[in-house]
Image: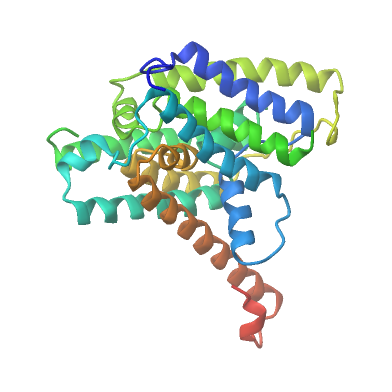
Length: 158
Length: 152
């Protein structure tokens, strides 16, 4: 069923939807939404330990399913190497290494810093948590600087 | 509705929205971080712009949640780990051009390389937990550390 979705859901629909999800989870269950916590819960399950917050595992699975649903509705659900300009610039082995390193840094850093773009950036900053706002400003600034460095180093389409 | 079903439903809407708004595309995030595509900033800004006043109002009125008791926010004061951890996170974000939740939505729609990033994130979380566990056992029992008590 292709073309049921626009090429890109506009920001004034996507943004408030994400905001209402944050509000909804607080309003109904008194829980902050975040994804790194969900990764942690999935890890507990994988190690045969009881997960302290099993709903986060359902949330994790839901994100996978939701991504699939959007792909279906736009008619571009297909296997592919969706890494755009980065895949054009780097040969496959280097691309895989870069993505693995990027993932490791994100996992380690978010666990250490107490949250990610969702946990600190959307959720924590909406509750005006000083630590979350500091974390968000730090990872935003760092990501901008590192992106400019990558563009300078690799060049081309990046 | 149980909290598990709520988690699933919210996950589906979240994954659908980030994929639908193309926050799962490397090029969108990369261009955002170069200030060539401002829409992701507008998405984040409007999300917080909607959530913050509603949460503020609910907190002021002493909202009682149906599944989790009285609404409370666990706010944190700024400490060193927010900055150090977030510097690593920001570096990884810039390299991979995706963050932990969109990487999942990316896999869900068939972009197989998202899986590499997700494996990396799992590895990073495990590594950090191992470091924390090691530090904890070192502080708790300095003289003899038995392998079994390290536990990771």
